[in-house]
Structures are given as structure tokens and as C-alpha cells.
Image (cartoon, rainbow, N blue to C red; front, side):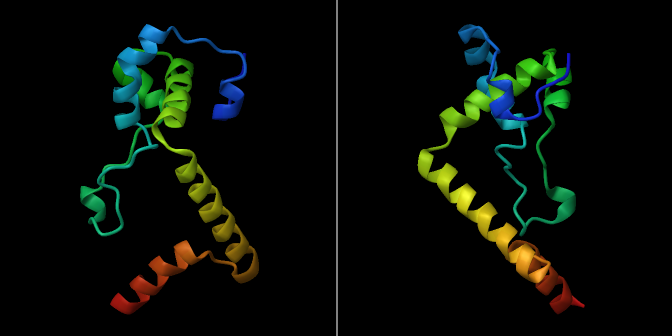
Length: 119
């Protein structure tokens, strides 16, 4: 059986016991790439702490990656407000449109300009 590739696909026909969800929800969110604490651009790369993949979280917690994925997907929807989801959609849309026009998005351009200024 193939693994689901997205939260939408993962949520189609999967069930997680509510007690398992409650037990692991916070740990999975903290460890995941959903909430990236200490990953801001102003922190030196050697001090950044990117989140773990579902596979890595599963290995650390002794859970199947598909269970981790389902808990993470549901937890993300619980954690973020609709306004935050809308802002993310608009941000991604703007970045994609800029890339299509300029070959680089404003997000990437910001980093390139900083690097050029340092050199």
C-alpha cells in the first residue's frame, strides 16, 4: 500500500484513536516542520533547529509514520486559525506569481539581496 502524500489524502480514510491523538499531538507538532521554532532567518544557520519529517518523528516516538502524519495533519488544522491558513495561501500565491514573472520570488530575492550586500 502506498503512503499518502498530503494531509488531504491522508485524511480520506484513516482513523486515529482520540486518546492516541491527545497523547502525541503536542509532541508531534513541536517536533514537526509545521511549527518551526528557532528557524528564523536572523538566527545563524548552525543554531537553527528545523523540524523533523514524519518518518523521523515516528522513529523517535515509536509510531508508524502514517500515524504521525495523520496526527500532524489534524493537529495543524486544530492549531492554526482560518485567517492564518488564508494568509499562507496568499503568501504562496504571491511567491509563485512573482517567480513566474521574474524567475525568483520576493521571498528568495530578499535573501539574495542580503547576501549580495554582505559580499
